[in-house]
Image (cartoon, rainbow, N blue to C red; front, side, top):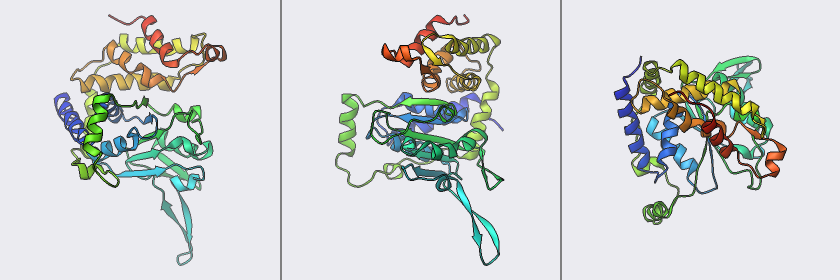
Length: 320
């Protein structure tokens, strides 16, 4: 089942309108969340505390109408706290699976880098294969399973860097900035007199989608063509990251696949049945910024990964 590109645009506009009831600004962030949702990717949101990362994820989940779960990552969290465990039932003399919060459709992994890598790794199989293995038995997650994780910048106290294998499973790493003065004034005007926690539903955010609609939305990508020239452009760009002298680690083939799929999704959201080089260029930084590692010499010189990606985009020949 799939919807037309026009129906997809209408659904996307409806989701944007619902999220905007709670979130001031951050339009580009919401658009990229929509791209990830349609292309079935996971998203990592990074920004200073207090920039509404968690609230954005909650509002997005509410508008999508998906079964929503949340894990607050802490230094003492264990893998079993995420996945669940098999507990022995003395009445039946059998083991019974107690499911963890990961058994949902949209998981908010809040402050994911405040737990050690051992616990972070519990998400690896779930994010890649949409299943978890407990005591040798595989349990399947929802077909629409999506992780929206938040993290504080590495400069903050009490955080652990995410392992490269974990980062590579996120489609996007999105940087949540501070609002500009006008947006911040609107935020304080709207919420400065409210007391207690803010909840999307209390601000009028309601579900305008469900699992069936979102499956159909992803099906709309069947109508979008990625020409051989665009595929070649993606591959050249990814391979250029591995050959750059200032990068110690380049992007993986998984990154190339994800970038091509995200370009298709962006084209669909713009009502086009074909991807263009601008789709790839617009998504290159959020797809690659968390996958690349600077060389020691580049770090000493104070080089920036995003600037390097922008340079590679400019220097890699795009199809006309």
